[in-house]
Length: 326
Ligand SMILES: Nc1nc2c(ncn2[C@@H]2O[C@H](COP(=O)(O)OP(=O)(O)O)[C@@H](O)[C@H]2O)c(=O)[nH]1
Ligand SMILES: [Mg+2]
Image (cartoon, rainbow, N blue to C red):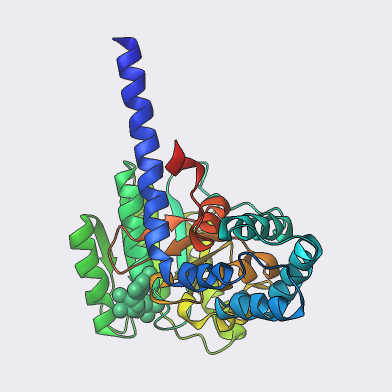
């Protein structure tokens, strides 16, 4: 009986991991198609100059960025100059290993407060996917049994507050909102008070996307951080910068500009389902110091996954992951 129980438990754990892996695979299939299509054309060939050009074009096509693409082509040429590539899997495995060597050690784990509530600020330019990501995070943590509170601190547009209110109903979590025109920091303050008084585990604060430059972002963050600290001195525990993945290398540049010194602790790359430019996540991972923590793969509340380099690389390179084989 005990064996049966543990087997069932193991099957459940494997099942959950496989479902997440499948979701990532489906989510990034546009990028995978570009890469895999390019690898297929190289099978049976040695990497001479023409083949290197083709490989480079494939990698740039999936938006890995010129620097990473060039480096990978160099490495691949060294390895396949004298022997033919036997299969698309072989070149995919090789590139995966090389990309992983390029990744500096980073801590992609979400940060939590030692003592509840954990306060997470969601920032980013308009349309990048902040409000949707806030809702998805609420769903993710609610599923894990946490008591989650939302704060609609994008008070500039009534529609923004309505959008988050709708999400709060769908997800089934409470929300704090100010009157239209209220200051974002006053909403954050009220939300912190409520989170403390009613013992919420997690407070997610959705902000306005009025970020024309880095100074803008820093000013907004500074104001809102000051009021959070009045109530929750150790907060905010996480500041997530949301980036639109369909903008590829532009998102990488945006991350570089907005992260330096601004207190951002993690990146969320959204809309990867709608683009073949998913390779930008790799460029991001190798060029930006702040870690990618989450990826957005669709418009539903379940379409947000923690970033895991192995599964992500398997998915975009079209490799069968360990979980799928288990
Ligand atoms: N396909 C897709 N659409 C997304 C994703 N994340 C957000 N969106 C859509 O992008 C649009 C802008 O999102 P929103 O959260 O309002 O952005 P905000 O202005 O930064 O708050 C909405 O239509 C969302 O449904 C994603 O991961 N995949
Ligand atoms: Mg919004």
